[in-house]
Image 1: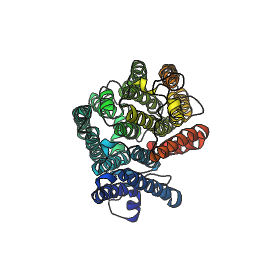
Image 2: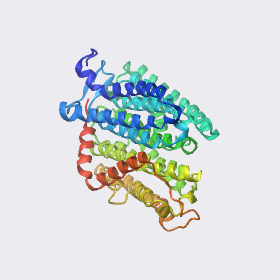
Image 3: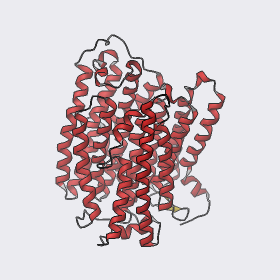
Image 4: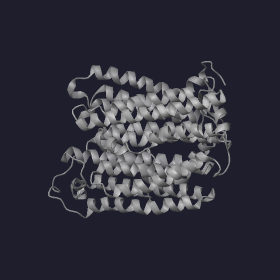
Length: 490
């Protein structure tokens, strides 16, 4: 473990350095623009994000950074490995596409908005790379504080202010509980390194203090990924926050939560599910309840953002299946699922934003006859919903297939069966929306919905991603599976 500043350590943190530079650049660029040119901020952020993404890929492809083995830097506080790379790609894709769909959303046309997006992404990236409790907490709070501000950024909307306040109060409470769990672990082990602590936490010891610490951490991590019973904030915050923020919050933030979840509970362990581990039973129960409640509550929603919020809760339940298998295939499947989810969910929100801008609301009835008003938007929405529902040839089909297969291979076929049954429930409301798009009529169906160029690019990226991961899923899954090996390295 090296604490010196070397070329290797700088390259390992190149994406984070780029995000810090983006924060400064976008604030400077904002001061140079005239009030009527603020739309350019989104394009600027998207281009900058693309450069960081290409640099991240370039370092891996040409310079083998990160390599096959994990490298610890800053005295073990940061782990530079393939798992970190995959999550960085997910976060940067989320930032890139969110920036594009923010360009014509008037309530967020300010430099502070894009700087906060970059700050949150920086926090996410450091969460995924954290190898130490101190670094993990600092990274989580960097991301969380940015997201609190983003949720309440539209000060002209009382719902946005309410969403920001609710998110702040609930999030602060969850962070305090998580911090207490971390302090217990430090007190019990005298260590702050995750991999050293994990040997005790996952060793199956019948220590009530260790189990209590694990439960407290599950509360904090569970809040981040919106699993039952820590989901209660999601519908209100998702509905009230500006729609681009909701898209970012429901994808990149959830992926960051799972990055921490998986790294912490799998660090230094290779094995199969062990019912004797109390924390494992808790996670399985949360997984099943999340899939059931999220899907059944979504059926009764008439507001599209609230429906997607409950759908997002259910999706967290599916992603949790990969974690509880405690296998490389399961962890790789979860990472693949989160990659699919970024494309699918942001595509749905992009369409919701355009329809909402035209009609002034997010009600389900506003989507009646969308195929006649904008065939392109209806097609993008249909593919996004089919992917979320797990229908071929979209990415969601293989994402669920890999998760269910990992559960069966790990001997917990009954969890895969629960996931499959609840997936059929999800199909009911996803296909109902598609029915509204293509079969229902609207009094305004002759009024075309304009699609700005930035939205066309964003939707093209998401649609290509959905179809690519659906048709050529195996190479992407092998990539995430190889990355998942890092979670099991000591």
